[in-house]
Length: 421
Picture 1 (tube, one colour):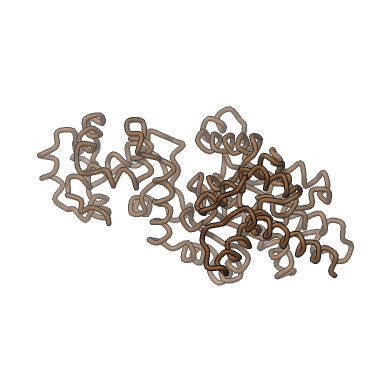
Picture 2 (cartoon, one colour; picture 1 turned 90 degrees about the vertical axis):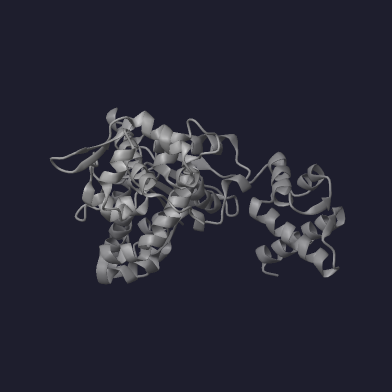
């Protein structure tokens, strides 16, 4: 439950938020609290232009306070320009110190702009976590679906059939629950730095950054990682399956592809995740329908024209069949991240992760050695089988035999599925 704010606290929060936002260019519009963002949003461009100037009418609209003078009398670090009624902090440091000394902790933890400043002084304050909370509030206050409908009118219904849009706290997948390779962790760290330093990268001309291709066999964590990055970075997730967007409305495919990319830019900063990217290669190789080829060419051009640095969109595509992709598809991405079947040590760590809340007595190294060729998805299915098998015996404590039995059962079912026998 949010604290009840006093009038002075509300006004100082607004002015601190605006001042910090003006000072730090890499803070995004979505970092602003919903009421502040809505107040200063340019309706034609759907952007918030810097610098923001706070006027008396803004305080009335955002804080529902019309008696600003009485607040000014009590706080020496506030001042007002009588010519245009604009308010400002005459002493930023004094205002920041005063605000921190009040009952303002919950405000700081849930306002990304404030969290970005105060995390330097308080280890319990986290800018990424505040972004997750704020994105959820932003979604509830405006409604992402309503925003799409506003942007696309009657066409929004068809568009929403092709994409899934989720806020960070709606995504169940977490990177903390995964076992990543050093390469994968390194690429994720680089993407995070690129997000944090978009302004710098733009200034030095490095704009072709933030297009990553995930490659690897099914069940190795490509989709889970893409979704997990939404929570990790505190970014909305726009997810689309390429086969659906190309096949659903063949005559309208090129327009739909353009609309999906435009939508991602409008919802920036966000992650645009394209699954089944190998469908590009299948379509380019087909002579059956010229519309398919035109749609694929539209997609490749749209990828060329989107940028993390300039548009605030982290583009991730995933494929189970990288061998099908030709050079035209590969060269669109500045990074390729491999998701291979886990080795023995990774399988041991995955078993430990998945079973860390389960009462079990087992040698994880032994089990890992017995599951050569198993993916992370396979291991989770094995654990599910073992837990459900124990529950059939009215047990919540597992042992080595439960896991071995589940491994054997999974192996039989997998062989049956592959042979069709």
